[in-house]
Amino acid sequence: MLLLIISSYILSVSVATDWGASAVIFIQIATVWFALRTSQARRPVRRAAFVLMAVAGVAAIANLTGADGTRPFLFALGSVLYLIAPFSIIRHLLSRSGVDQETMLGAISAYLLFGMFYAFFYIEISIVQSGSAFFAGMSGQATMKQVLFFSFTTLTTTGYGNLVPYQNPGQTLAVSEMILGQLFLITAMGKIVTEWRPRWSKGDTTS
Image (cartoon, rainbow, N blue to C red; front, side):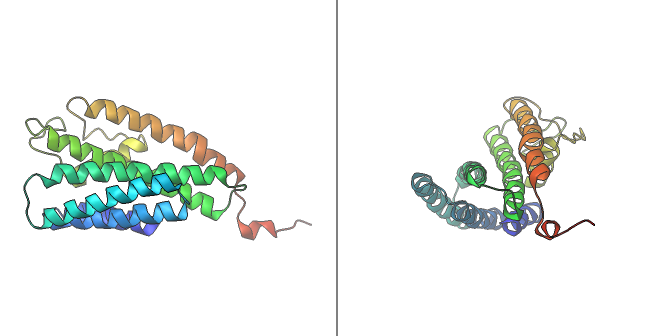
C-alpha cells in the first residue's frame, strides 16, 4: 500500500496533463481498494467505496476523452476516497491486540493518506474558486505540485510559508490539517513507537 501511495504522489507531481490526472485516479482506486481489503473494512463501507470507485473510474475515462466539466468531479471523488481509506485502516489497527510491523506500516499509510486527501481537497477548492487564486500572490488555479507540497508541509507543521491560502475555505482547511497532523503524531504514532518491539529485539538477552 505504501508503494501505491508513493506511486500516486510521484505521478501527481510529474504529469500535469489530463491523462495524468486520470492515471492518478486509477492508482488511487487501486490504493483505496487495497486499503479496504487489508484493513478488513465493514461490508457497508466497502459497498459505498466500491460505488465511488466505479464512478471515479468512469469519470477518469471521461476525462481521457476530453469531456468538459469532469475535472472538478474527478478531484471531488478523489478526496472522498482518500478520506475513507485512512479511517478504515485506523479502525483495523485499533482492533489489533498488539503492535508489530504491520501496525507501524498501517499507521504510516494512514498518515500519508490524510495528506493526499487534503491535497485533493485543496485542488478541488482551487478549481471551484476559478475566479480567484488559491494561494496568495499567485494567479490562476493551483497545481498538483503546489497542493501536494503545501499539504504535507502543513500536515507536518513544517510551515515554510512560501505557499499560503489566500482565503477561506482554504485557510480553515489548512488549520484543520495542522491540528490533525499534530494529534496523529503525538497520540497514534507516539503510542505505536513506544509499544513497538521489533521481532529481532524479542530474542535479545542480556548477560
